[in-house]
Amino acid sequence: MSLVVVLAIVAAIVLGYLTRINIGLFAIAFAYIIGSFVMGMKPSEVIAMWPLKIFFVIFSVCLFYSFAMVNGTLEKLAGHLLYLCRGMPWLLPYAIFLTATIIAAMGAGYYTVLAFMAPITLILCKRTGMDLILGGMAVNYGALGGANFMSSQSGIIFRGLMTNAGLSDNAAFVNSISIFLATFLLPVAVITVLLFLGGRHRQIGGLGADFARPEPLDQRQKATLWLTLVMMAIVLAGPLAHLAMPANATITYINSKIDIGLIASVFSVIALMLKLGDERKAITSLPWPTLIMICGMGMLISVAIKAGTINELASWIGDTIPAPLVPLSFGVVAAIMSLFASTLGVVTPALFPMVPPLAAQFGLSPMLMFTAIVVGAQATSISPFSSGGSLILGSAPDDATRSGLFTRLLLRAAPIGFVAAMLVNVALTFLI
Image (cartoon, rainbow, N blue to C red; front, side, top):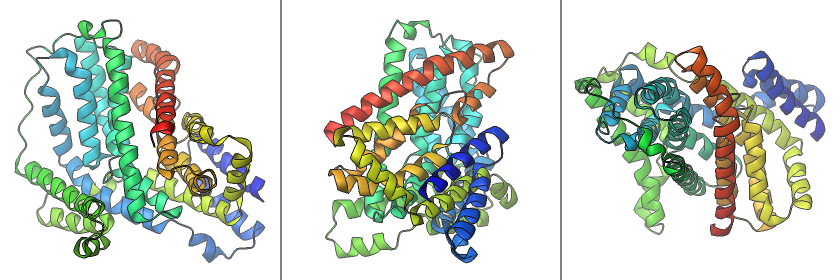
């Protein structure tokens, strides 16, 4: 039975990759066929495996954050942040990275940030002489790290997957902080090495006098920005205060009432009442393909858990791999999977459920293993076969640039990211 489920997971990924049909739809079909006709489950039991909490949280949060997208707040904010470094060309890679990080952390999400930041980055590379790989890695790393922020899209998904794996909300929040910090600090080191190795910082010229100051934020955009900052503060205040004062009864009570999905729903109503954006456009801009992929794969993973597949895989790993190498091994597996599959929709839903039993068996920190998985998975996201790399490739201004960029992303950027991630996972093994 476990072999059947594993083959179904692999088949869903392969079929999705070959046909360009959402992997989640294949996963739902396999979950129904295997669950009902092979394992004898009732159809209602299979339907109940739809990860409703994760779906609701992603839907609610992305709906609120979408107002900042549809009314141009985030795009204009990105322009202002880049404008600040116009007189210091060597800061440009850091400015691109930090801009992408901030915009993604404010809820735009990984794919959305790359969609409008990648073309800007490649244009800046052409105008300033900055290396395309350096620019591509800066914007990709920034979008990844920012999206991993505790109240942003990927961070929320990771927290939901961890609670589904049996962790408490508080433990999931703490682990998400570790994931964010690791995926924020690693790029800074990589960008610094790439920038100053071989004197690349001296090759970057100024943006020129024609790089005009962006228009100031209008009243709706200012209100959207403040509303976003207030929501992030409310969402983070409870868990952080509880970590600082876990024995305080009042803080414990308030923290127990904090739910980012429900809070985001309230703020969406406030945004609509203030007419900060069009409701239909906001709903249309939601990441529906990502939602279907995550929840569909979640159903199939739930079938795998019920079939005992996850426990068997964890047991096999426990008998085969030495304890100190388990986090590194998970990082390598995640990196290989991420070459062809989504970190959010496939890699983390498949690997996160194995963490609690293996951590207990080896006496390892769950935080270490969760962080190693995400660091490894996102190491190869810049591959042209992965979603991030393909978005960057699609932003190339001409065929000649695109052709050269494909080879450099595959043979240079992806290997650099992989080696850096594995070094970080080795370091984390000794630190956590």
